[in-house]
Length: 330
Image (cartoon, rainbow, N blue to C red):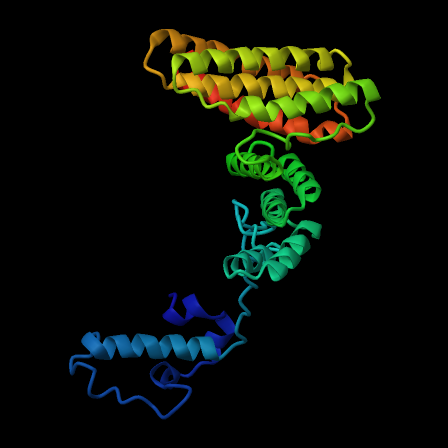
């Protein structure tokens, strides 16, 4: 007959186990069976039976060596990679310096701002968008300080770092417009009247100087009556002819002269654009188209170092002329 002990321990242990062992706790004194056994010798029930079974299990298992549980297997590797591992943000590296530079600029400490922006721009681990903004802020500070050449170099660098960033594109356009405005005289477009052209032939230089002197007179005409409008148109066309002759010399003279032609037509168009007469408005649109063509001719000229300011002025004015034409539906 198979006993309970046979099920939980070895046969030898069952042979040597005493009957009392089945009702004795190995860890203490004998259990009192009298209170849990029925007089008729039947089975125990309730809490007494449960206690007896627990005692038998303890007695049988404690008499032999205990089995050592097998080691737990290592936790499985995650099926999905942790997205935070190996990820860097714009707050890593030297990029936080950009925030310090912004605070310094807003507080009016341009010296500290310049140093902080320069540190960000010189960093090797700075994300391109942050570096581009640092270059743009440096350009704005330089432009306000009258440092035209460094400002233009910095906006070129900002554009190269983030060519598709609309914020950079808009900021670069504003800096360029500020540089052009700062180089002008009053409300005259572009470089100041009388600006010399280095490296051109003396004969061409003299012709350009005379044209520049006439430019101030033509620019001063503010037409209010129809006769004044005709006078402005005639004076403009005469001066345009002089600049066209200068442009034929090529090189820097061509870039500067074509820009002046565009500015003359541009100003004349704006003088006429807000007149109520349909004929004058049509003429204004035609002059704006002539201005845009002259600006494009200036930009198509040779890319000489001394022509940089003229080309920048042409690019800025061309955008303005095209915006007006678009608004006019032309």
